[in-house]
Image (cartoon, rainbow, N blue to C red; front, side, top):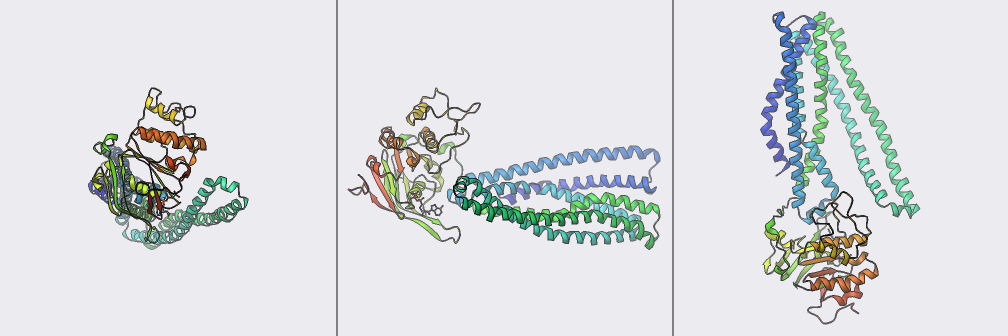
Length: 553
Ligand SMILES: Nc1ncnc2c1ncn2[C@@H]1O[C@H](COP(=O)(O)OP(=O)(O)OP(=O)(O)O)[C@@H](O)[C@H]1O
């Protein structure tokens, strides 16, 4: 569902309530103003004396109960909207394609989640503005009732003061935007300084450049703008606050000159203006709030648009990965193309490739850097869809409808794979799990991993190579028929690398796995049952079709 649909749905079902209740609430507050003014000025409220106190107490209590009920309602409405927005964003991410996800970038996801939080406050902002508007109208109505000309003069004075405040505020907003841009670039530089700590330590000149040419000048500029903007902001706020004294001054000194007001009328106007201060402040902040909400909304619309493809969700019926149910996967003229995100032109292309992978094969995918091996791995595992051509699993065409089912035949350890922080798969990590501990010992991690105290997970303070071994254990525990390992052995020491190619892979093969290894380790090519070589996105060699294997000893 789109953000706008959720928002308009919520607003439609609640707007009448917000308006009626807000109106009632504001009228109660307006009634209290009448009471106070009647006491100060001695006019209005033609009730018998005996009824005034109970009526006053009744209105206060009713206003209090209504106010609380209304605020609780708004809290619930806001958190419901936040929940639905966030869920909508998370579903979008979960169901998006890898291609769209990669193109989006992680920072946009965090921004989108923050944007939903801002948008969820729209009903509350609308309600506050509406209440404030009602109070302002009531106050002016009261002033016009007490002394029409006085009401016109006050309205005119306030209109001038508010206009001056808003014009100055607009200038400050521009400075604030500049400050936000500086802040964004500061985080980028800071990220480089933190992530590249070692690279900076080892190169003093680069470190000096990063800090003295980029980070410190950015902070200095930020200091200047912050000083300037903060003083401007302070000036505007102070003059805004003191503007009320201009209004008070007009009531105390100008009105008596123009219309001969008496003390009671002046008192009524002064109390009314005090009542107006809060609501007018709310109405004034509406414009900048509206602008920032508009930006958040537009960003979310773009976000939704960029994750427009919905791949659907996994359901249990999609899980069909029993080893015996896999017999072959076939590529028929499969083509894939990356699109350059800057100019939208076609970038690297996997030219139409055709091949068949049968159950039990151990295939090494080889080729130079950037030749398309990992992209082939993504196509094979169904993580990206061919631009043209067909992929068939057990003779069935891979379609959008069965893509999740297709993927459930594959497990993979990617080059830059991620080890999850929680035991999401609910693997039994206790020593009684013989399958797990057999794998732990096969991967020689017995004395390296241990259960974290009080948590259902293994420790993650492992070396890169050891983390890859743990990732392989988790991948094997999935018991899927085909396993794809992308440069898995690159971080292993020579001894373990040898063990991996000469013992582990044959063992997996013996156990009926189909193993696809993307590798540069040419000294072990002979341990493959088949070699496929990529060059510039094309298969230039397939040992199942040709005799000699290039690069083999
Ligand atoms: N997300 C992407 N968008 C655009 N181009 C990409 C993307 N990912 C990879 N490429 C390009 O596709 C080409 C093939 O990349 P791929 O990762 O498949 O190569 P590889 O053979 O696995 O290389 P290596 O051995 O270095 O890992 C590269 O030229 C790369 O620049």
